[in-house]
Image (tube, rainbow, N blue to C red; front, top):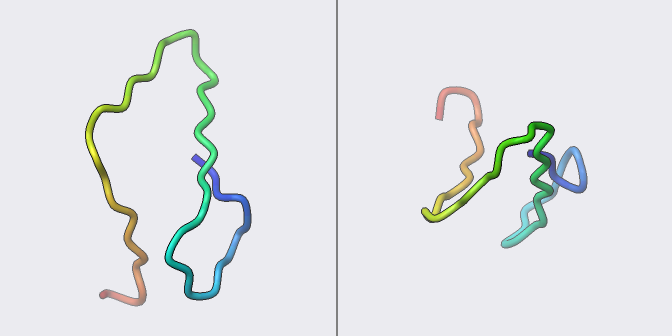
Length: 41
């Protein structure tokens, strides 16, 4: 998984690129959240 940029200022949305380098099919059915780790928080 990669983002378009390596760093973002505060944003409410951004695009993510999913890449599958295997011969297996990927299926996503669950919602998820991305969180930022700052120090230990």
